[in-house]
Length: 129
Image 1 (cartoon, rainbow, N blue to C red):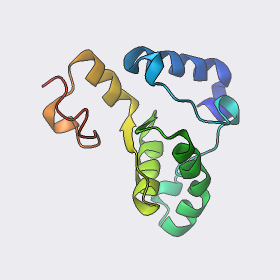
Image 2 (image 1 turned 120 degrees about the vertical axis):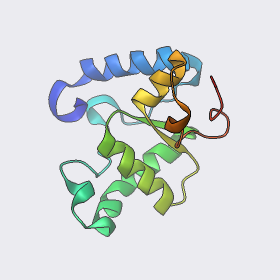
Image 3 (image 1 turned 90 degrees about the horizontal axis):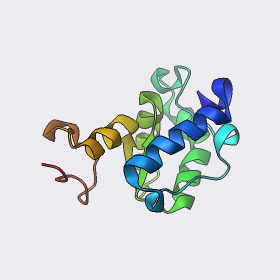
């Protein structure tokens, strides 16, 4: 959505949303970012292509980019990114949690159900229950 279509203005909108729900002091950006960010390697049907080794090879750059932030959580805006980054984390033994953007928004609003907490770490798993 950012890199190939709407560009930096939508990236700024997404940053505003994330900073609002997690607090600006908890926000860590990746570099490069916005329209110059790296692809996770799972989009365009590649996630379902049946070539996990190739998908993981192309996604390694994104995995390393996430790891360089030192963040405990990686928030993803779409299902393909979430599934790919979660798989990369498991495959390459990453030390972060992968969350859908909607999960973080619902958690901040206090409406995240018990059955929607699969990807939360222990620091957030019981928040708001």
